[in-house]
Length: 65
Image (cartoon, rainbow, N blue to C red; front, side, top):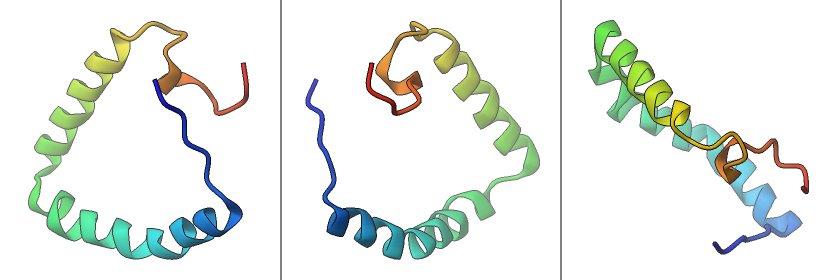
């Protein structure tokens, strides 16, 4: 696994771009889905995450181990 670290400038760029990204995802992806579709995605996501080892990196809180 490769771990990347953002510089302060990189984080500032992400924070600056995040609102437009969220709006694009919402309008292009989520707005096209029904409430049932969204519930299905949540159910599927929970099933996948439930199979991960509790110590899997994706479940960490971001604090160094």
